[in-house]
Amino acid sequence: MVQKVLYGMLVLVPITILLNYFGKGGHSLIFVLSALSLIPLAGVLGSATEETAIYTGPKVGSLLNATLGNMAELIIAFAALREGLHSVVRASIAGSIIGNILIVLGASLLVGGFKNGIQMFDPREASTNATMMTLAVISLVVPGLFFLTEADGVRLTEHDAERLSDGVALIMLLIYAAYLYFTLFQKGFTAKPSGHEAKASMPLWQAIALLVVATIAVVIMSEILVGVLEPTAESWGLSDAFIGLIIVPLVGNVAEHLVAVRAAYNNDMDLSMGIALGSGLQVALFVAPVLVLLGELINKPIPMVFNTWELIALIAAVLLAVAISQDGESNWLEGAQLVAVYLILATAFYFAG
Image (cartoon, rainbow, N blue to C red; front, side, top):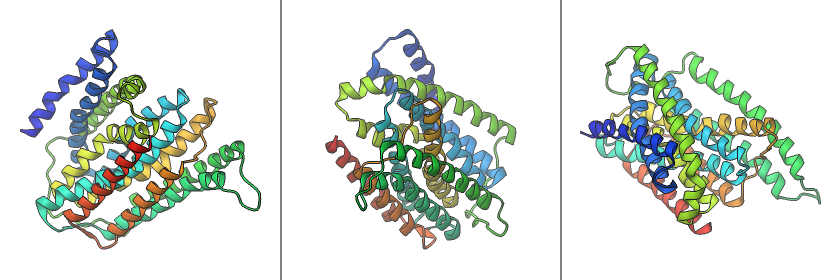
């Protein structure tokens, strides 16, 4: 029944494209429709990802989902960067990491725990992801701390912060490449079985074709959403911080939301944890440095200088990820706790704007 509703919602995709092309309906309607259109597209993307994961295993499957799911957010952030909306770009990076750890992982643990009780996952792989997430957050925090603080009467200039961000971005890309090599090719590092043997319902080529088509559609809908983001936010009375930290990540991460929750519901916690933490890792170690380097190419440099609120939220989120990933098991209460922290932060950023 749910799947039929999702597939029925695919009609919103051509409707949104036509309304945007002919300039009908107003920016608020197009914003809502483009956001809703991403939900059925995420469902298709999720089905294709799960089919691909049957052939490739949860590691490659979760990497594929994170990569394709983050395409929408990368496009949204780059469009904002071209418009010079640096605060929105930085907030979207922080918000995506926070959202993946707190709301994506939290909802997965909550739904999976209610359905299956105590769930098990490979603590080694989850711990590796959590450790890498800690390193990623440290990398993101360092330029901002050095720029915002003064030591022995010395403080970085904005130009110095930009050069520091460029250097950190290159290092982050290198460590991300090392992380991919380790998780995909390191021998003896295997995930636990999920507890059920899934059978593919389509050939591999068809699953990959669906991934590509769904990703292209997500890219198109994301471009439309970006075009109406600012006027919609202004008419709704929302701040740049709230847009970047809450709205953009929620819309951009809708694919990971649904796929990770469905994997947890099916008691495949290795895939679910891999998607939630892997997507946040990819934003921190790939999307963020790529945006920094792209900013240099288009002559709109964006130093990785997050404000104090964003820094606190990032550190709190990664500490929770480390705590939950240690014992190799999860329950619905842990999920509820993560979601509660996210709602508290979302409320705080709403009033802070």
